[in-house]
Amino acid sequence: KSCDTVLCIGGDGTIIRCAKEAARYEKPVLGINVGRLGFVAGLEANELGRLSDLIHGEYTTEERMMLEVSLEENGYIKRYYALNDAVVARGTLSRILDLRVLLNESNVCDYRADGLIVATPTGSTAYSLSAGGPVIDPRMRCILLSPICPHSLFTRPVVFGEDSELAVMPLSELGAEESYLTIDGVISVPLKTYSGCIRIRKAEISAKIIKLKDLNFYEVVNMKLAERRA
Image 1: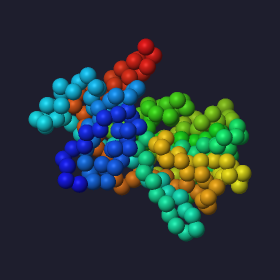
Image 2: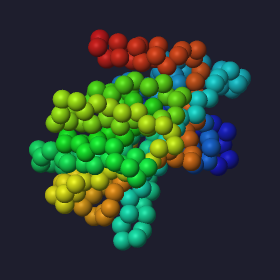
Image 3: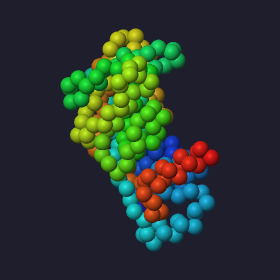
């Protein structure tokens, strides 16, 4: 609570976990990448000499939207926060899930798929990108819904406004028995223990990411993905 800035050394997963914790106290985070991609990192491991810019105040801070994910069990609401995404997917069996999505209590679509990804703009370059979702500037405020291997020729990712509340529910008891909710690839919740639906909306808190380099988001994406191809 008393610090000015949080320095986090690791890959995207580590930086995201740190940024979510720091967001509770409205503290900015500078990520130093020692992982593979490092989309949310402000520096690479070979750029530590630029830490003096942080001391001199020569940096910018980006606010990144987060998601609040809630489930109900016996009248008790369990809440989680996601900086990348919330994923509803099947378990160990190779079985297609039937899922219904509501927008502000109105039906959007019924999906037959391996699962659904609900992502922030920050998370658009994570699992959603691999599932065919669009790349979204992380400074934007919107909610991205990407189906995972949908059993349809016409099902596509959908972008919703920041004030939207999505509800995801299995359409059969079997679907609930065999599916899991995963938050930022770390927290896994078996849905068979919960009743009702998963509700997802923009969180009231946001992550603050420090940027020391004068690169726009798309330059970073091109560099990172080019490094991966190499």
